[in-house]
Length: 190
Image (tube, rainbow, N blue to C red; front, side, top):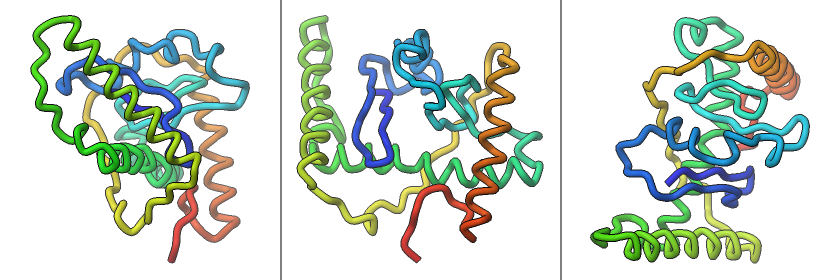
């Protein structure tokens, strides 16, 4: 399952049906949000992603080595990782609310069983958002996972405007956070 969430850990997009062995970036490339970003994003909106994803105007991944070793890029990657961890928290909350999602013990022998499975997961996502909208708060003290960084290489050519957009976003992110006296984009309790 590929999950996209907002800052408030509400699920705003998901894709179900690929085995866990598939890379996140490969599953993302099968989603409508990848193929038709103008249908999903307003100008200036974008997703944050790990370095396995390709850079575009609507998807801003972390820098990979050797570019990641430059000081500004390291700072930007740090800011990104602090914000990207929200999706890991979102998935943790989803699995905590619906323990059946932790380990689905259902065999998928035909299309009908797969349909039931995807309907169940979709229902859990919808209920997750309903509870979030009702104010079902979760304490961040239980959400210490810093997330994972995939090692998968970037495939394909990178559009120049996407690279320029990420560079502009990096500059604004670092300047804004340094002016505040903190580096992470997301707020945190000290």
